[in-house]
Image (cartoon, helix red, strand yellow):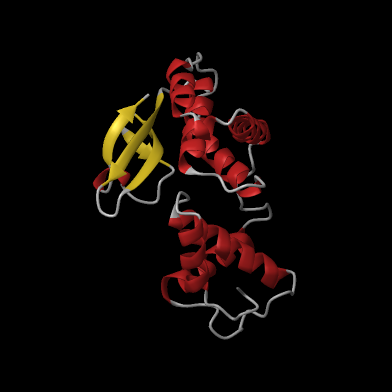
Length: 202
């Protein structure tokens, strides 16, 4: 998209459409960081036409200022152990064909125990961050049921009482699955409950 001279806002919109389960703010942040990294390495001219517009221009400027002020990398460190757990969870979902047997995945998530919490410091953010990376690196497209099942089980393993929620909207008909913690959707770019009527929680 950069070679096609797309603006930053166009790139973010296209990625948000392709990965609609990732928060748009996170996509914009990642795109900004990637562009700044290319500029630092001399692979992209900062003055390239069409690259910076509106809100995202300010985002890029803020990102560059943060990089300049700090000697250490500004990107969050990928939680390695959680990342591997998330990748294994996505793989198990496919290997056992849970996507073709809703009863099995429903039963599995429902029976998944909440483990005693050892390190609750920012655990929800760290799990969501790991799942986002796992979905990005996974060789197949990860659908919402797979993503929410893995996120819910991983959070429970880390001591968080999470729920997998399944809902649907009428027009146009569309089903969706997501994860909630304390009754609040997590890792969603919008309030899904405004668009989807809840069918089931497990």
